[in-house]
Image 1: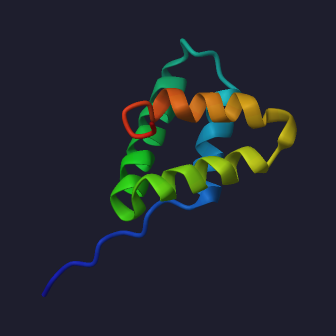
Image 2: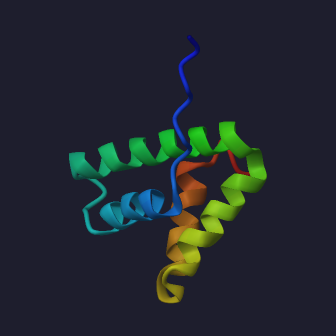
Length: 85
């Protein structure tokens, strides 16, 4: 029997990680844990749908709150630097 692969992260789960990072000091160990989880989510998204899926996810997270869009885009680009162009 072949094991099913897990579904890639949803916009809701990625947004929750981003919001968790936003609420913490960058030096907080929890912030580092959330950043690592966000990197793993990016790797899963990239594996499931490539660059187009990563860009769509970044757009969805930014669109959730237009006032935070630029900061969230910058955060995702920093954490997903090796995945996004």
